[in-house]
Image (tube, rainbow, N blue to C red; front, side, top):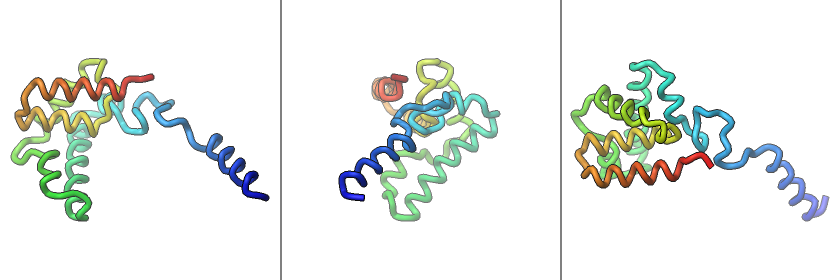
Length: 136
């Protein structure tokens, strides 16, 4: 097989095996990430566990020196209960316009609210998320 045939074979395999980016058949995912539909199908404790898992993942990245502690501080709030974060995410997903936002970004939204970021900044962030994850 020559170089041109190899390139064609690889391209054909990619076309067959790799789904188009952003084309989710599963409505519970947006761009391959669990979203509001997935989240709302869970009970209260499972929702808290999901959010806690995100925070634990951030901590692991710090431990592995993949991110700095400063970065971790932007994505966590000390002394805040996960039930309160869950309530913020629940509230976010009550609006159907937010359903395609992945849970990880809903977590960031809740952290920003808990941290007391200015409402205008939070609304701008939410508008960016809606636009980014709007089903095309």
